[in-house]
Structure formats: structure tokens, C-alpha cells
Image (tube, rainbow, N blue to C red):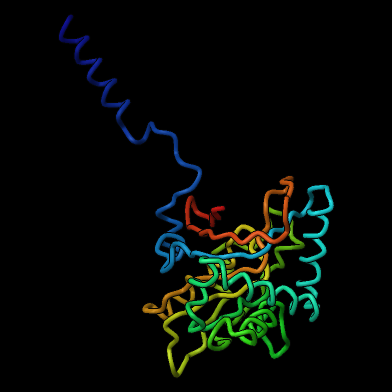
Length: 251
């Protein structure tokens, strides 16, 4: 009788350990990675960035309201506002370590991040910003080597769950061949929110230019939806990481 009980207990233990009895995961990470290696083997798994201004989309108060006006003007490529903001960036770079190191004693090549539409000869906010930065000496030249080869949905007007993923951004970018491969690249964008676009852009560039040092500058950094701002001018250094299947921005 004792041997029979021991046998039954052993059988139950074997069944408990059987992987067939474990709950199945809602998705298979290995399978997803096999279909798109970029999800698992991104050539660039993090990108450091510096931003100059803070923007609060919804918080009340005069400072937050001013940040929204700033963001609207930059998105609209208002020449006077772009010139003013770039002048502030130039002055701040003389006293802020983060900015002076980013632009690398003016040796950096500025790469404007394309908008959501396919890249054409028409200007877009990041290109206007990069050209203005170069004009004040922050960067050796502007290189339009990163291009949007297919349309993605515009994040600013899309519901949160329908905004383009890192994968979609990555696959929509292309890198033009370059006669002289830049060794120090600074991606330039007007606004950083979650950081998916910047991370995908950096990964696409790194895959084409594996020996280049790639960093990023975003003029405006979106803060928490309800966070109150003390100042609109708020130089900040951060990083966007690939974590948990998505981009994670800190801070």
C-alpha cells in the first residue's frame, strides 16, 4: 500500500512539472523576434539625448500654456520662433555641459529626423531646426542621410494605442549611401515624447553606419500629462532604452 501511494505521488509530481500543464503565454517573444529580428536584436538598444525646453500638453497654468504655444510655433516652422529658440540653445551651450558635449566642439554632423510623411524636397520642422543650429555654429554640417521611405501615422494626432511602434518607424526609414561616412552624428528632432522615433532612427543609422557615434538632440521634451512646470526653459539629459518590447524614456 505504501509503495502504491508513493508511486501515485511521484506521478503527480511529474505531471506538475510537465510544461503541458503550465499556462501558455499570451505571446511568444522568441517567435516575434524570429519574424522581425529588430525587436530582439536592435543594432542600437539605447540613445542618449539632450533637450532644451519642457512641454506640458494638458496641465493648467500660465507656464504650461506658454509651453504649448512654443510647441505649436515650432511645429508650424515659425521662422522667428525657431531663430529665437536656436539662439537660446547656442547661449545655453556655452554654460551647459550637456549641450557643449553633445555638439562636440562643433564637429558633430546634424541629421534631421524625418516627419511621418515620405521624405521629399519640402522642408520639415527637424530639417529647419538642424539648419538653424548649423548656422549658429552648433554642428559642422547638416546631412539628410536618414529618409522616410514609407508613410507612418502621425503620432501627434493618433490615439495612444494606434501610434507607430518602434518596428514601424524602423521599417519606414532608409539611409542614403554616403561618400564620406560621418563619425559623429547628432539626430535632431523638434519634440521627443516617448522616444520611439528617435530610437528607431538611431537603430536604422547604426545598422548602416556601425562605427558612428550616434546621439540625439530634441528641442522640446514632453513631460507628464498633468505635471506643472516651473520653467519652460529646462535643459535635460536623458536616454531612450529598448525595454519590455517598447521604447522607455528616462526622464
